[in-house]
Structures are given as C-alpha cells and as structure tokens.
Image 1 (cartoon, helix red, strand yellow):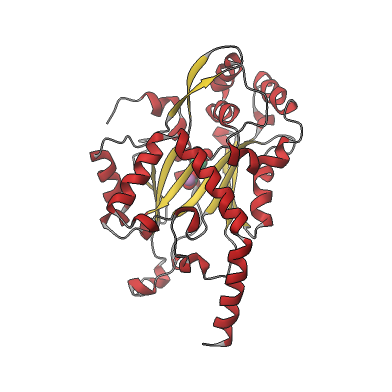
Image 2: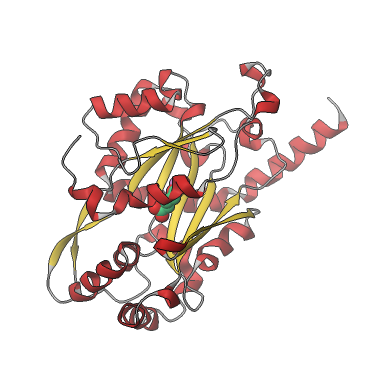
Amino acid sequence: RSEVDHQISRFQGHEEESLSLMRSVLGSMERVYLKRNPTAKAILDLVKSVDDADRVCYDHLAFRTFGLKGHGIDSMASFFLDYGYKQQGELRFPAKKLKALWFSPPSGLPHEDAATGGGVNGPLPRIFISELLVDQLNPQAQEIIEKYIGTSGSGYKHATLASALGSLTWKKPLFSDFQQLAKESEYAAWTLVNGYALNHVTISTHRLKTHLTNIKSLNLFLQENGFRLNSEGGVLKVSPDGLLLQSSTVADSISFKFSDGFTESVPCSYIEFAERLVLPQYKNLRAEELKEFHRRDGFEVGNADKIFESTSKEQLTRRTG
Ligand code: OOG
Ligand code: NI
C-alpha cells in the first residue's frame, strides 16, 4: 500500500471514532421521524425488503428553521460544522421567503464510499437546512413567531438535542396561531408545530442494488404499492443539467394537541428520493469504479421549490392519483 493509502486509512479510522456521537444523534432523529411518520417507515421497510436491506443509504437529511435571532440555519448547522461538515451553496426562494444552505460531510475521505452500513451508519448524508426570512412576513405573522421564539430562551443552542428528542424548544402553540401563520406561510405553520424535527430523509437511489436504482422505476413501484407522491410540477423533478433527479411522498399528518385544547391534524414529515447521475467527464468509468464524487453533487433551486410543497395543504388534500 502506498503511503497515501496508509495515511488515508489511519485518518479514516480516527474520523470514524470521533463520528460516533454524530451517528447516534442522527439515529435518534431518525427514530423520532420513523415513529411519527408511518408512510416514511413503510417505504423504508418496503425498499429494504426488495433491495439490499443493510445498505439503503441516505443522500441527505433536511431541517426547517425560523430565520430570527439565532434560531435560523446556524442553530442547526453548528453541530454539523463542529463534526467536520462543510458549508456549501446557498439557495434562495423569494416567493416562499426562504433561504437554504447545504453542508457536505467531512470531506476528502474515502469513508463516503467505504462505509459498510446503511442509513445513519452508512456514508454520511449531506445536510440541507432552510430558514424562513421572518422579517419579510406580514406584521401579524412576525409577531406570532416572535412570541414563540421569546419563550424559547437558549433553545436555539440546543437545536440538535431538541431534534433528537422530538421536543419543541418553544411553548406549545395555540391552534389560532397555527391557523393564522398557515395563511401567510405554510412553512411557518409547519415549523411552529414540528420545530427542529427531521423534515425528511432522502434515499439515495443510485446506491440501490435492484431496478429501484432507477428513480423512475422506484416512483412507479411506490405508486403501484399505493403510495402518493408529490405531484407539484410533475412527480419527477429534474435539474436543468438533467443530472439531479428527485421525487418525494406527500407528508404524513399527525394529530397535534394545541395548548388551547384543540386536537387537530397537522402536516408532519415526508420521505424523498434522489438519483445523482454520473458527470459527463466520468461517463466512461466502469460501474465498479464509480464513486459518489463522480456524480452530480449539490441541490437545485427549481427541484427544491417543488419538493417544499410535500407538506402543503394542496398536496395533502389532493385526490389520489
Ligand atoms: C426542503 C425541500 C427541498 C431538496 O432536496 O431540494 C429539498 C423542505 O421541504 O424543507 O428537500
Ligand atoms: Ni431534500
């Protein structure tokens, strides 16, 4: 083995140990998510049952935040940055009054492709975090958000903990506030009741071993099994370069006890699928030679804009089909 290989494998071993806390945090977030979202759990189980059960990998995990007084993207990102994640590109969604950043896993190391497990024990997922540009909302909506943020104290310093435990960092909301916010921004209403909970996990389809590796086959397979996919702008979202293909389910709903005594159904989380095609400069590589870095990286604003709709009332109440 070359000196470089040796260096890399030593560094890799060291990294992997130091990542054990992060992997268990991700595991706790995933547990909360699978418990609250039966559709996501059923799909994950189904894909595992037909593909390689131990090697279903996550492309990315996503979170939503209120971009106000430290409660925005940074509150969730700091943990990942401490564990070696690197901030990548910014995406803007002016109509939705949102901004997002994504973070790549500890870089330059082969553990991405060398990981032997799946899920949170597999290649580390990218992290996608968005925030609502609260100061662009109407004054009433801003007031509501500020009221809850005001009850949160230092909650923003413990975003990952809250997510891993499935707790809100602010007081339980009033149904009237939820309704009022939903009129201005469905994202705001979602975040009020779900807080830092995992918004979705994304199955990396090109890492699957069966025909489901093709996202179109996976979409068809899920629809044949009675699952409803987000149809906004068409089920399959394709980046302008044609290399990033994404689809997602319609979010599960959960019964939520509001502080004013109402128990109402609210949107919870969904599951997404992403296929990253091989970049043109690597198209002659043999399948066994292909690594994740040979494929289209990053996110796409046009795709993401439609995937956000997976928790929208319009998608949740749409007739099956
Ligand atoms: C995020 C939607 C965007 C992607 O992969 O582009 C997204 C959200 O719904 O919070 O997940
Ligand atoms: Ni996503």
